Amino acid sequence: MNSTQKKSQVLLVMTTVAKKTDANKIAKTLLDQKMAACVSVLPAMESHYFWQDKICHDKEYLLLIKTLKSHYKKLEKILLEIHPYDCPEVLGIDSEKTSSAYAQWLKTATQTSF
Image (cartoon, rainbow, N blue to C red):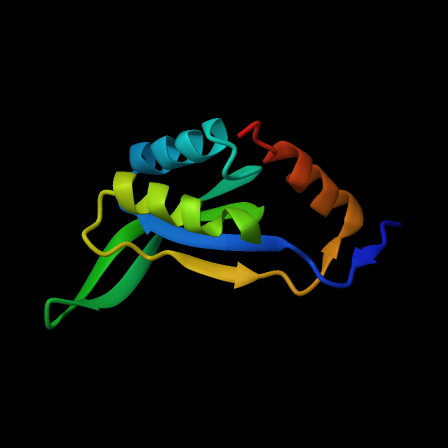
């Protein structure tokens, strides 16, 4: 059994997109740039929200982006540049606890040479 880190540096970032092709583009970009160790694309779901003073509902794909807290600012900048929405959801959720093995894998997977 893996031990758990007390102060995790793991961050889960969420965003949504209308098209699976956009989800795949975002995932590939973040992985290629080592801003994420894993991007899970969940199947289409229905989102209900306010936009321009109206209640809207659309099918969207949810992306769960696993990264490190230290990558958040750059990851957010990349997302805002390539995301198709005018005002995309970019939510960073701190991981209170993460297994040591997973945290180490994530750190290794997102190491950059710059």
